[in-house]
Length: 313
Ligand SMILES: Cc1cc2nc3c(=O)[nH]c(=O)nc-3n(C[C@H](O)[C@H](O)[C@H](O)COP(=O)(O)OP(=O)(O)OC[C@H]3O[C@@H](n4cnc5c(N)ncnc54)[C@H](O)[C@@H]3O)c2cc1C
Image (spheres, rainbow, N blue to C red):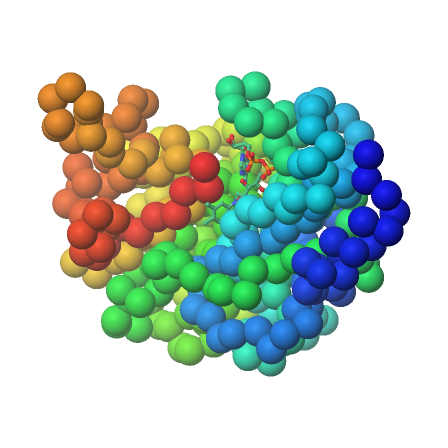
C-alpha cells in the first residue's frame, strides 16, 4: 500500500504543471490546457511533449482492469502528446500566436481498453483530472513533424488526420494562417461519430474568415449532414478530395501531412525474411499518394518528401 504522505511526496517532487482549463467535449474527449511551473521553451507547430501522472492516481470508471504491484504505484506513466491549438484567440477572430500563451493545449481521447496490447495506463488517469490539479509535463518539446518542408506560401497544404491526430494540424493551421499562407489549406479529419469532431465550430468559423481554408469532416460510423461515411484513403482514390479542393493534386506544389492511426497513414515496413519494403494491406494514404507521384518522408535517412507523417501508436 501507499500512504497519503508518500503520495504527497511524489506529487510535490515530480509534478511540475497545473491544469488551467479542461473542457470535455464528451465523456471520452477533452481539450486540456496545462501551465508548466517553468518557462516553457518555444516550439514549432506540429511538435509534441510528454504528460505524466503517477500510477497511484485514480482511474475513471468503465476502463479495462489494471493490475499493479505495490512498488509500481509511486512510478510515473508518461505518454507523448502533440501540442494542439484552438487556432483563434478565445472569443475573437484573431489567430493565436503560441508565444502569447504560458500554457500548452492538448487534445486527448480516452482509450478505455486495448484488447491487442498493454492496458491503457495514462488516459484513464488524465480523464480524472480537473482544473487546478497537478501533473507532470515534459520539459522538452520535440519532433520532426513540422512545417519546415513548406517553403512556398502558394503551395497546397493537406492536413489529413484521424481522431485526435488533428491536434498538431491545428497548430500548423494556426501558424499558416497567421503567417499569411496564400495557397489552399484543407484540414480533413476522420472520426467515428460527429460528436468526436472537437474543434468543428472553430474550423467552420475559419472557413468564413479565410477563403483559402477548408475543413472536411469525415465520419465512419454515421452519416454527417450532407456527407457520407468515408475513410481518407477512399476520398483520395475516388478523386473526391480533388473535387473538394477544386484542383488536381500536384506533387510539385503540394505538401501532405498525415497524423493519427497508423492504418490510415500506411507506413511501408521492411519484411524480415526478404529484407524488402512492403506496403500494408489495405493500402494507407502514403501508398495511394505515392501512386500519384508523391514521395513520403524517409524517417531512416530523414530525407523529406512531400508526404509527412506522425503515427500515434
Ligand atoms: C508523437 C505522439 C503524439 C501523440 N499525440 C497524441 C494526442 O495529441 N492526443 C492523443 O489522444 N493521443 C496522442 N498520442 C497517443 C498517446 O501518446 C497515448 O498513447 C494515448 O493517449 C493512450 O495512452 P494510454 O496510456 O491510455 O494507452 P497506451 O498504452 O499508450 O495505448 C494503448 C492503445 O491505445 C490506442 N491509442 C493510443 N492513442 C490513441 C489515440 N490518440 N486515438 C485512438 N487510439 C489510441 C492504441 O491502440 C494503443 O496501442 C500521441 C502519440 C505519439 C507517439
